[in-house]
Every structure is written in structure tokens, then in C-alpha cells.
Image (cartoon, rainbow, N blue to C red):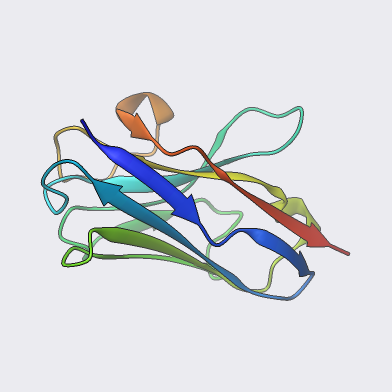
Length: 125
């Protein structure tokens, strides 16, 4: 079984930055693609970014491209999301996710097998 624990959320003013972390435990970390999703109140969960098992391939939603950076440290079994130039519309609960098998990046929530509990990010205007 895999456990994912997010941290780093909080309240920040528009234009500010936050770095989210996702600590993974329970199985071989470096063989699985991982991703970040978010869900705002009253909206469906949406894809934010994904990274392959080796950490050398990434893909972003258009809404965050150029502002957010996904990365991972396989030695620390931790994934990160650096969020810069935050906007009020980035306000959401952010979730990290991992595939059970498969190193390739994927963007659909149904392709991920493990999820964290979420961390709240609130951006004030």
C-alpha cells in the first residue's frame, strides 16, 4: 500500500509563492509517475501537473504553465510543486497522486491509483 501526505499549503497574497510537498511511503517510489490535481469549491477536480518516474519529463495544465514547476526527489521519495505568481483562481485543495505501475506521465485522474488527503491553498486578492 502507498501512502501520500501533502504539506505546504496555506494563505498567500496574489503574486506570492508557495511550495507544496508530497511525501510517499510504502513501495518503490521512483518507478511511478505522479501528479498534482486541485479542486475548488463547487468545481470538479482538475489536472495541474505530472512528472514521470525518472523526473525528466513533465507536463502542465495551460492554466499553470510558466508559473508552477513540478519536481521530485526519488532519494527522499518526495514530490514538489513550486507555485509562483499565484492568482486568486488558484485557490483550491491540492492533491498529489501516484500511479501503481507505469512511469509515463498521464493527465486523467482515473489513471492514478493512490491519493493524498489534500492541502488547502488560498490566494487572496
